Image (cartoon, rainbow, N blue to C red; front, top):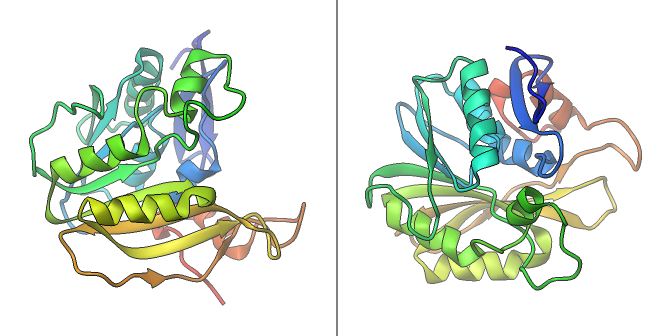
Length: 251
């Protein structure tokens, strides 16, 4: 595909996937790949990603699970165009449906999905210095939609017993878990992500189930690097080389 002056064309997973994203403004970060590796799907499930951005998570899931169909909801026009290019470039046009819409009023049928995946903005709109560029600011801060908006949308579109997979900053762990429980999205699997051993947690990965009872399993820590400024851990390196296997703690 010819180069685009607005978007960069970036290869990931040793060239297994290509992702288009704005040259200026919002670009995906490591937590998106971690979420895609944390997700566990089964069979021909109907999956929706809320706030799909440039499509890196959707494309990774399509690579990992060839039988799924995935709806990718995005509100920003520039990111929606990047998402469409990502889907087209990777040959996923029959399996990923880019869809414009707002998570506060998703154009999706209630109770029609088995799985929701979401990487919502981490920062409240009122917190500190905001990114100056529009797509970056809207993707990284709760300017257009809050954590509650994402969780309410998930509860609405999920079947009873359906699962939500979410990544968020570890700084808001108590808030995320409390809001999930309050909305009947019971946390069942939790994993914290650290840059390296001895560092404080950066992200939380959580799987919740709509209508389930209380009991959460806390998985072993996920370290990105063996040491500060060191190489990737075996788990992360293995995922980047063989994304189909997902993330899996190794001794």
